[in-house]
Image (cartoon, rainbow over all chains, first blue to last red; front, side, top):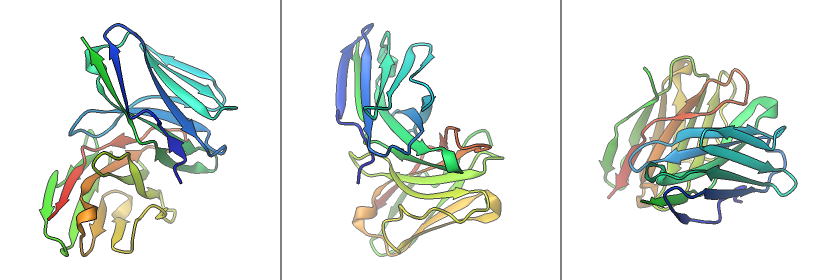
Length: 114
Length: 115
């Protein structure tokens, strides 16, 4: 039962353009969502998060959008840079009730071409 | 320490042997997670410790897997009678969890290879 899904295993964009990574979830109890970035041979690093009370959160070049009715979130990176090339994981948790377990998607490999 | 520390970084073991993987979380973090990433796969949840509560073991794939967290700090993941399908990168993470809406910080992982 894959509760968090990233249906695109890979994405390639040109430097300077926008990268859009998508994530879908099935559990309506999820109310906190995060994006992580992972380079080879390193652990994932936190990128940005959003609570279900919001529909947008922005941090520099990174913006996360949440569409609760569609159970869909996306990460926008603009402008994309070659250093953004990595695997991106979305994650979700049921924050209420203090069950902070994170459920991850399968990841999307982003390649930003110079 | 400054971050989550895992040891060893790499482990090669023979099929059927037991292995222990260690995780030192960030000081003061009450929540600790174990995940694994098999080749070409996503992050698979294994077990979650939160303070003094009973751990959430719902992700452990079989009874060969167990984990403990001593004194609310260091955690050890033990895999008994290892099988080739156990080969993966095992990742540990910790979070402050003063409330539930906090991000988890990951270690670099232990790459386990069962031959």
